[in-house]
Length: 50
Image 1 (tube, rainbow, N blue to C red):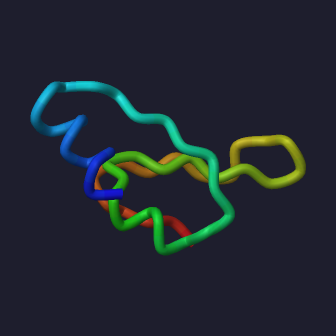
Image 2: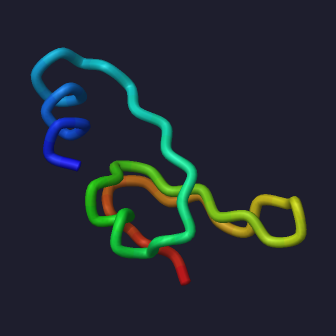
Image 3: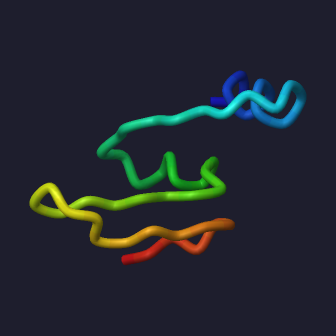
């Protein structure tokens, strides 16, 4: 994860990740959560939605 974070901050590369692990949200500046194929929440800047 540190490598991906470094690529983003040092080189400006956008990283898009799909995961079922809530701990990965710590690294995100934006999280989009889906439920039944629809967007349930869209949060930016570490505002992790429940």
